[in-house]
Image 1 (tube, helix red, strand yellow):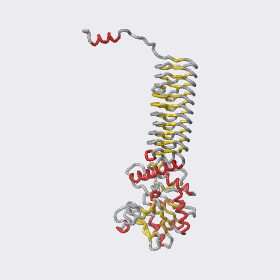
Image 2 (cartoon, rainbow, N blue to C red):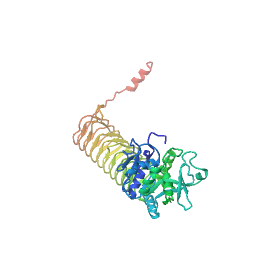
Image 3 (tube, rainbow, N blue to C red):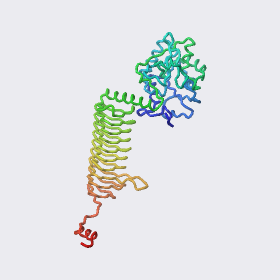
Image 4 (cartoon, helix red, strand yellow):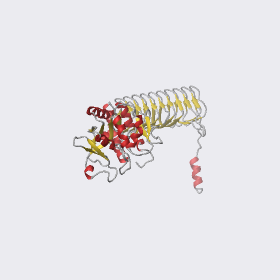
Length: 445
């Protein structure tokens, strides 16, 4: 991956790659999920509710499973998943286990057939059709030309009988070009011992694609994105241009919502029913109520309740709550503020650390001056307030219910309920000003 980040911690549609097979194992009914980690335990903080086994030395897949062998206390089949094979699903895992049990096998490997099998281990079958061995192809000399011509590949997904596995692991040897313990060699050992080792062919290669570099990751990410989008479409969401949107696996969208082109939905974003989001909007960890509209806007860690509208070209920052039927309009930025039901902030404004009551209207150019250079302060604006254009509210400040503020005012003191706050110099006109300026520019006139 050419990265300081461990491969399986790279992002795949909102979750680290390792979280995908872990989630599939749980959905398939795994009694215990054992995660094999490096000594620094980088995976422990990102995957919860798993048993951690530490592989002290990076000595291959066989070494990884050997590190976990002491935790295999059940007689149930052991399913081995690879952290870099993220698109494996619960149904595929269940089918694999069922095929393993039905065949009375000691080991079953999930395989698929690829047009270009480069980089994958090849499945060599015996005369009986079972798996004779798996040939690795990581470096030159691992496989012969005939073996490289085989298109059936090892997916890195296996099922083992626990007793047979425990017997085979200590017999693995690192006599290969990589100097590693290959788990695939355990299959040959089990077959030599008279056990049934079979291949279970997965018809859809995408399910068992591995990620070895960023090119593979980009391909798998595209497949995952399509899967996510199709899931929402089948659930009643209208995505008008599926190829242009990006939706994380963790996002929820209600039926009859419309997702317009070039929209990005990230993290724990939840969108209700009957909403319109986009075009060109980005939502990260945002909650959108039923029937709300978000147009050409950028939302982060905020909540927009039912029937409210945002945008176009608005920015809702963390801690913002836009209550029912409220409006934040064009070129408005809101941070850590509570905007009341039905309140309108139509355009060209900034509200930071503010509480605004229901039914208020703040004119263009409304600014809350919430920072004094040392501390942040809150502005409280009551219900039914009428704020005119180009008004600055210097916090800490309270504007009473049904109060008014005059255009161009810098409000530094509280405005009582029902009052009009005016904070500007009275206008005066200087007659003949242009003629005097002209004389200054050209004294000869």
